[in-house]
Length: 273
Image 1 (cartoon, one colour):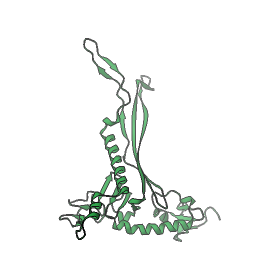
Image 2: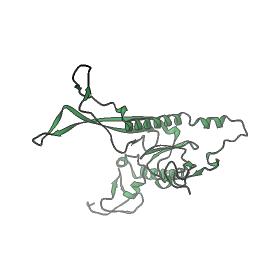
Image 3: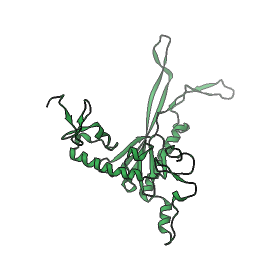
Image 4: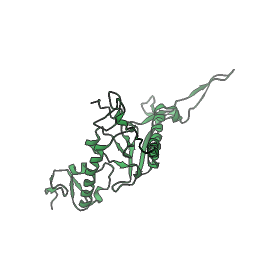
């Protein structure tokens, strides 16, 4: 078969355009079918046609869960961890419309762990001397940048972790050149500033606390869910727990399924219908 021979998708049968082929272990996949795979799936090249067909069938079943998902808690900014504590489901997504985006919906019991990784990078800052050359400051000055990443470990047939970054742009701190320290009866002296304490930075604290909140929430979900759910299970027979949707003034967002009371959805920002 020549390099430029026409190829057809072994899943849907459609012709694959130039540069549109996604290789499988024993066949070809078009980019449209590839888009339907889980965003956390990374083993396409070593997957067979039958394995991809099985995953796409599971993804269609997942679409039904996405349509039923009712957000009761949302954490994060760009990437968000959404909890549906009624169904004991969670998802990680950037999408506002869950039914359309079809993010993977997992049971709380699928969670095996969660951790926050904070990656620190140091870059020396340089200045231009009289000859136009870049030289070091004396004493040296550095810029520190931080990335905050969440890794959720899960049991799933097609992936074992969901890894995403909390901060959209790097959190940066810079060392100062020097600090003044006057002493009584003595001229002012200077002391070189060392590595800055990142906890003095509001953005650093925000993303660290955000990451810790997400890990704590997922750990609590795995170990038993909301205390309210336990209370409802232990309630005497004949007493029904009030559904969040039945509370006066509350409405359900048609986009993400979140329960709200205001004019806009607190989870995805959609207006009240």
